[in-house]
Image (cartoon, rainbow, N blue to C red; front, side, top):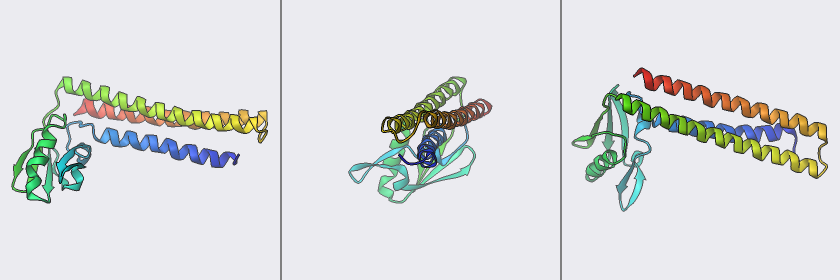
Length: 187
């Protein structure tokens, strides 16, 4: 088995991936302000297949409560409008030539609660992913011990290091969740 630093590097890279996924998920949660990340998960029926909205136009934020999609192909304007309307984001787009304007409505108390619950689900999924990475790391340490590559003392030290790394990532996830919940409540 490689050394502790190589194992830690691999686990850190994988835990960073879980944290990055959480950031992307949170960007898609609308907290009352316009953000291009809000429309990124939207898929448009274009050229016979479903493609991300970013492949048919440019998303812009001309003001804090308005998004625009500058559609590159005029024939796709209707499909972009339909995709945004059907996305479940509660948005009502309107076209203006090749530009689709998407006003961002005020959040209701009910919608804020839904968004906070969704943020909690995303955070829990990230925690589960981080714990899965920890489990993989612990399994690697146990396998190395079985092969007599490391001793009992090393197992205890490596396990403690992996747990410390995991605890740090769980704390960062909790901090991001608290920040997102505050953002949802303030708007």
